[in-house]
Every structure is written in structure tokens, then in C-alpha cells.
Image (cartoon, rainbow, N blue to C red; front, side, top):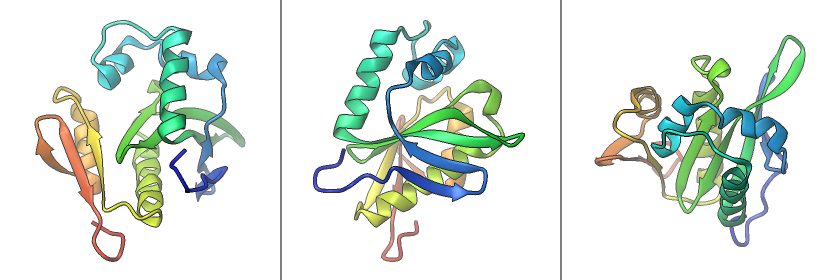
Length: 162
């Protein structure tokens, strides 16, 4: 929760994709964080999350910012395929392995950037480990610029665009 700003229950991105306000659903989300490669990209750790770590992460993100699940429609059914948050002026995103490389993350980031602009942020940062080439490419393609070793920034101009 961002102080003084109501978080929407859902942000519709397109007919197949939306961002849904976080609610506890560890049965599904813990599965994403059992992938050691994903955990390496996100936190630079070589082991999967346990439920306690996952709960702490979501509690932190949802209490200090806006946290959403990424909901994607495939074969006529919606599935939760990742999460994205805007917390303390930073964006963080996870898309589970089986849904990567479909531009889902790119569209979700664009939606969060629109939200950040709407609530008056001047810029948004992303912390990306230098070995995470896939994320670096996605964020720089969207318009983020490297400002430090592992920090990228998207700056809004007066129209809400970078």
C-alpha cells in the first residue's frame, strides 16, 4: 500500500493479461519460487524459497507498495503466471519459467509504469543483477537506462513517457 493512494483491485492490460492485487495464494506462488534458476535471477541465491521466506517477501512488498499477480489467459482459462510490484519507487517482476519469452513481462512492466506515472512518480528504478541478461534486455528495450552497476531507471517526462 502506498500511503494515501488506493490500489486498484485489477489493472486490465489487454484481453489476455491483467494485474490483480496481491492476496495470499502460496499454493500457486511457492511453485514459481521453487525454480533455483529463477531464484538466482531474482535474489542471487542458489536455493529455492520456503513458504516463510515467500510470506515475508509478499508482506513487505504489499505493506510498502503495490503488489500484483500477473494473470494471463491461455486456452480460454486465466492463470497466475507471476508477480510484479511497485515498492519504494522500485519495480520488481517475476514470470514463471513456462510463461517467459512471451512478452508477458514486458506488458506487465508497461502497465506498472503507467500506474507509477498516474500516481505521480517522477522515475522508477529496477535492480537487476549483471548476469541476468534476459531482464536487462527487457528493461532497456522498454526505456530503462543504466545508472549504476545493477540499477536501471525509467524517467517520466511531462507526458508520462520516458
